[in-house]
Image (cartoon, rainbow, N blue to C red; front, side):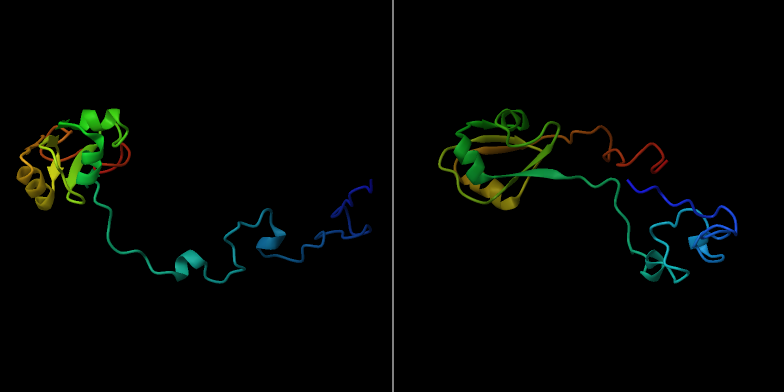
Length: 150
C-alpha cells in the first residue's frame, strides 16, 4: 500500500505552507459546508419564502364508503367495529362517504357523514347517529411540540 502524502509540513517539503489549498477563502479553512456556493447567493436565499401557514387545529377524518360498509355485512357500524376489521386506525375520527349503495338497513354511528351517504342509508331503512368528537373541548388539541401555540 502506498503511504499517504503528508502535506503542509514546512516550505522545504512538497505542498508546504498552504498545503495545496490556495490562499484564503472557505476552501482554505476547515470543512466546506454542503450548501456553500463560493460566495454566490445560496439557493435557499434565492427562492421566495412560502406563503400561508399550517392550521394546527385541523381535524382529519378517515373516510369509509358505503360499498365498504356493504362488504363488511355489519348491521351496526361504529368506529370500534371498523377498527376490528382493519378499515380505520385506532383513535381515528370516521366519516362515511356516499360511493356505492346499500341493500340492507344499517345503523351507522360515526363522527361525520356526507349528505349523499346519509340519504342512501336512510333510504335503505337505516339510521345515522353522529358521535361527539374524540377530543375534549371546543376544538382539537394543537399539533406540534410543546412550544407550538403556547
